Length: 461
Image 1: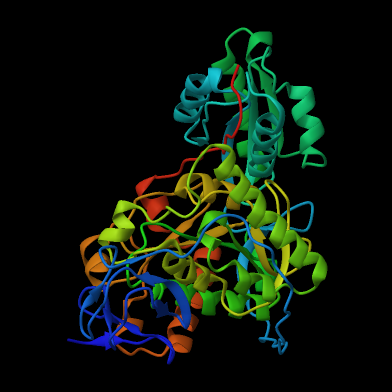
Image 2: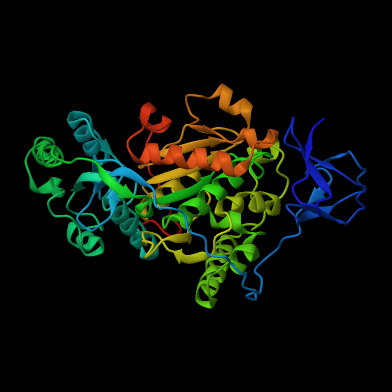
């Protein structure tokens, strides 16, 4: 039976055939369980060397909000040679890896209209249930997410569709939108025209004419912003797919590009490692606020903060949130954290960023697209057909998933389990992402799977 011991300090190892943990030494009751070189919980009973270690004999050590102190890490700045892809240059200097025409409804009441327009015109509508009867931060979040989706550089043209009586009025949305490409954005209020489908088709046809002359050009990889996400994790995720994406992220940052990692609840238990990688005290303070605000969100709804691993996670060998988080944050690589983003914010330079938002797959993917990510790398040990409004690269953590779900999975990280060299496989992934950036379609695009979901916290009228 093959085993992988991740760190010399670990008292458990991962069984290569199952992804579950086994003790590599006797562990006494209440002794810390160590994986990735850090505690992931404690033993609830004596555990013998060779025994399986899981939810039946261990539990989390985490609880409540914490005080944090900045202990900055030292980083050696590394630079990669400039590489290029073929993309679409936009009016604001950003680069698209696609040239899509989309419909964005401002309110859920007109979702069927948006879908009918999309079907008639052969484009995509991104429907949602919000835009009216929302108060305070929820309303602002909806506007910021929709604004970010409108301005994602992958769009060659956008039709913004309003009803006419919603809270998310066309005028207030334009204020949130700010500067936009007026030659690539059309607006239509359904209550102010006769046949809204016919009127919309005319506007979409104008957009189609405008994108006809667009051509891909050679663009530097420093113009790429790549989202980092995991879903349906298993016991292999933290030793194959997530570390692989972390190595990719380091290559991207070293090339001047930007990577963005979200899923704040899946930082709980590993947040100190990210805080110590903050580039300065200001970024450290923002990470502390990011973590504690999300813990307060849980507590304000009377929910336990540290009961995060899903049934699928547990079935795949993950026992506690510390274990899940330490595996999840492997996606961030080793680069310093350059900043913290809120919903709809844009990175102001290259580097690694943390993005506010929950771990829910569809919400997280939408949040990443709304801050300008042109592509999302989505690691999974259980498999998912999910696709966001930008190319969503599915990376399998284990060979069984890759072989069984080739119709969902784009790249296989499982060779790392069997001794492949991570640097070489990360270069393969980097080259694959460049091909996707230049037009190669991902599985979610081939399957036509693309949706959005918007985070909601408060009251609906």
